[in-house]
Amino acid sequence: MADFLMPSLGADMEVGTVLQWLVKPGDPVKRGDIVAVVDTEKATIEVEIFQTGVIQKIVVPEGEKVPVGTLLAVLTTNGEAVAAAPEEKPKPVAPPAPPRPVPPPVMAKPAPPRPAPAPVAAKPPTPPKPAAPHRMHISPLAMRVAMDLKVDLANVTGTGPDGAITKADVERAAKAPPAPAPAPPVAARAAAPAAAPATPAVAPVDRTVTMRKVIAAAMARSKREIPHYYLGNQIDMSKAMSWLTAENLKRPVTERLLYSVMLLKAVALAIHEVPEMNGFWKDSAFVRSEAVHVGVAISIRQGGLIAPAIHDVDQKSLSEIMVNLRDLVKRVRAGTLRSSEIADATITVTNLGEQGVESVFGVIYPPQVALVGFGKIVERPWASGGMVGARPVVMASLSGDHRASDGHRGGLFLAAIERLLQEPEKL
Amino acid sequence: MSDEEIRSLYLRELHKIAPEVDPKEIDPAVDLREQIDLDSMDILNLAVAIHEATGVDIPEADYPQMTSLNGCVAYLHARTS
Image (cartoon, rainbow over all chains, first blue to last red; front, side, top):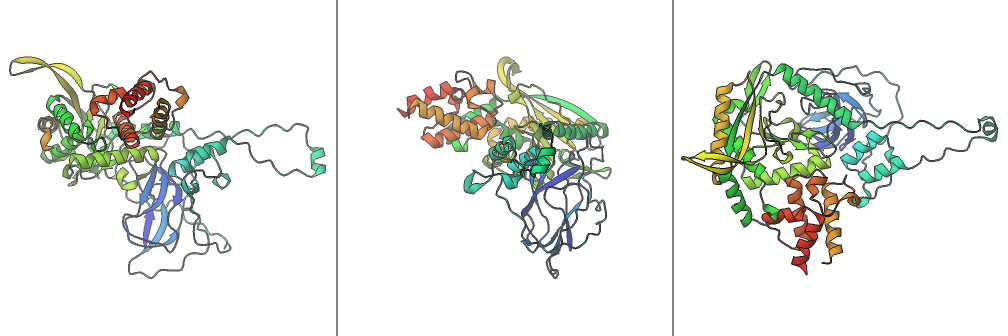
């Protein structure tokens, strides 16, 4: 038997809501399969399972909010006999958590699976239910909006492809007047006051406020626990930008590169020279990661930022990174990120140049130990070989964790990024 | 393509990229990036979508002409009629 727990999808996640199960008892699953959709108060994430076996029991039903580490489902792993699917609806291991104003701080390290917080209470047997869970044809984003607006999806008609419920369908349903209640008996009507007070509308959850609180708690924890140091380097981008312009001229519009992919690749390759920037601070020690999974800060249209990972950036061509980046941005905004993309980043890169920012001094996303920021490319007077000319220049900054590295190594890291960007054709 | 078809295409693709934007509130003469939160990935996706719908190849150097509705209509009008 193996437990499938509510995963920790980042330092800023303490609870998650199971929006949808994509499997039912008896379904075979293999490592990497997406089995559930979870809302983290910051994003909607498709959660993968990391065991191979057969789902035996769903423990936490759809709509339930539970802490990280809570038992969500039980599966039999290969070789085990599959027990009969339970006939009664299991009681969630955690009571529905009411919205908390501010999540209490916890340790920044990725928590080992916590034991289920509450014992399963005995429950009288209920009549057997059909084993198959209800699989609604609805996007994760629409489901999240429905949850926020407290819309009963059973009453929503989908207008999307194949009748899928869209965000617009949910919002329309939220605005629609409620169905009239059955007329009370005549006697009751006679006794009722002439004009009953209107039922107060349920205020929708302010998702932005919740998300800001979650982010603030994680960032405050980061600043409290991580001894940050900051370094900045101005980098001449003339060679990189000339190469990119020429390269994009050769490419069809569908295959063009954004300048960001050069930055991601340069950071990933620089890690080979200064590997202590890449990994996690766990159990009072730095754990270096061999793989270079770069978290890319991407803005969410509804507000906030999320930094999912592009895996193995150091091993990929610029074209491959561009394909990954386009896909990631699209899925961040569609609400279809995967859990591995949230949890795997070994270093984060943020580029705020498009917002006009010249220098970025970011907060490290624990348990990572470094964050690289890039600002806007601006023309600056640049002296080289005794001549002064105007060059496109970007400020690259490093937020480093003094527990894992120091300013000397951080300086070498930024110097490596600068050097790599002077030979863009080799990226 | 008629100007109206181009306008319709542009707003349709923009809606896919930024569904929160009300097309009626877009000032056609003003750069979209001054009106709504669009980044270079959004502009690239807009160029790709317009290319796929019209067959017009839009060099990177011409992206600035695509960032306003009126600019895009003029640009595509010259290349599709």
